[in-house]
Amino acid sequence: MDPIRILPTEDDNAIINKILAGDKRQFEPLMRRHNPSLFRLGMSMLNNDADVEDVMQTTYINAYQHLASFRQEAAFSTWIKRIMINECNQHLKKRKRLVNEDISVLADHHPAGVAAIRENPVAKVIDKELGTALEKALLHVPEKYRLVFVMREIEQLSNAEISKVLNISPVNAKVRLLRAKLILRGKISEYYKNDLVFSFHLVRCDRIIFKVLDELGIPH
View 1 (tube, helix red, strand yellow):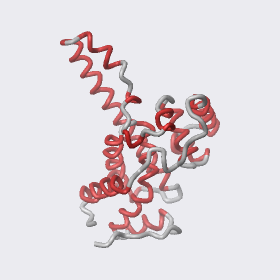
View 2 (cartoon, one colour):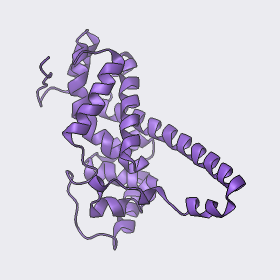
View 3 (cartoon, one colour):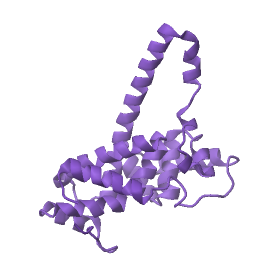
View 4 (spheres, helix red, strand yellow):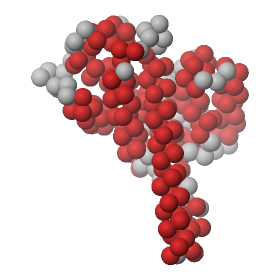
């Protein structure tokens, strides 16, 4: 089948109404519209592109299954980002639990190796494809500050939108952004472009979308 196209001026709610009316294939262009944003959001939390792809798939499936409950007076972009953040947090909890289990097993058999694991932060495991100066510097910024920085400076969300997505006050969002910039200062010069930070390529886009569509039984 030919790929579904959407007009740049067609808003998310109009597309969602088509999906709810039975045109399930409209979910594909909706995902394509939000893929880059969710990927950057996930990378700012998980630092691992394979994990982010998995979480994005789970996010889209959950969103599709609960699409009828989405209140359209809110922005779909805010709603889908909140789902993504919740799924990332669940993944981080699972990752932490698995790491603790591995450390416990290692401690029983090789006590000297425990320190080596604890000294190997996730920030050092970066995909070469994402090895720009800003990405490396961002990984030194604590997650709660890094997340606000990515949403404000890269995703261009407003302060009000960030406060809604993260469920924090606008003042808190501003403070976190300032803190992120202070940490970044001295680590990088004035160098970053939206398409270079946590870049999202077409092959990755297709891979995520086709897996989600297959899982949902939607033809593509």
